[in-house]
Length: 115
Length: 117
Image (cartoon, rainbow over all chains, first blue to last red):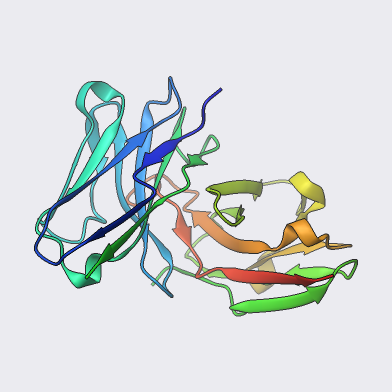
């Protein structure tokens, strides 16, 4: 069974450009989460989808970040325009039930560097 | 404010030595507790979790953790470390009561483990 897949694995972009990260969850997992780790800091929650609906987007830093999950399958996280402070590792996770009840499986992460 | 503290940023142990990674939490009520590991080039993998019951929890890869309510701690242990255990370890919590924030993990800053052959 395939795990959570994220791509690209690395992305280097210039400040002001747009980047789109993609996450393919484990098939059948209704719950999809995005997290981010800025260097030296904790891994922080960004948002949570249940199928195609945003259950909780309280962790999204600002309106330069847009997450979508069309059809309740894969998800994209777009940063437009990117700023230097957006650099970090973006993790995606999926789970069959809510994360407090079932195991969440994480992808390898996308390392985003904004220069 | 609710928080998770991992006081050790980096720990180095010799192969075969015992290991204890510390985790303390600050929450109104005892949350659900987790330990994750991230090996180089890999995603986070769940080692073990505590919801209730027996305070000594067994996990994968020979790890265990002990929940101590009086100390608000959930320390991770392994009796004999292997070189393949070199990785970064994250303690995480989820509120046990449903409500705001109860569907998201809150992580500590992580502890990087180096193993000397």
